[in-house]
Length: 130
Image (cartoon, rainbow, N blue to C red; front, side, top):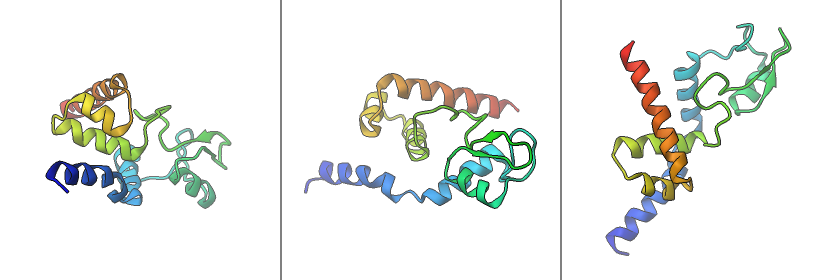
């Protein structure tokens, strides 16, 4: 196998090498201060609701009865991108990989990659100014 073949094979395997539990914990720390609480009433979620929440499923708070979801209120609300895709996208963008190459490798449209680039830039600019 030549060098390009090895690079392609390695790049194709990256999503399988990412620890999804550690990734979820990172998202929890970054977007929810490591707390599993209702985004409406602020009360801790039940054990059952917490499991659903941590699996990125919509669940209900037993205290206020409202629906809660892991990505609600974040840049990922209603997103059609997986956490693994996001991490890879952010890594590729930080390495200045061309947008068309990113789109192809993540099976996304060029316009979607561009929109995510704008979201990430807005988020990092706001965070960096505080």
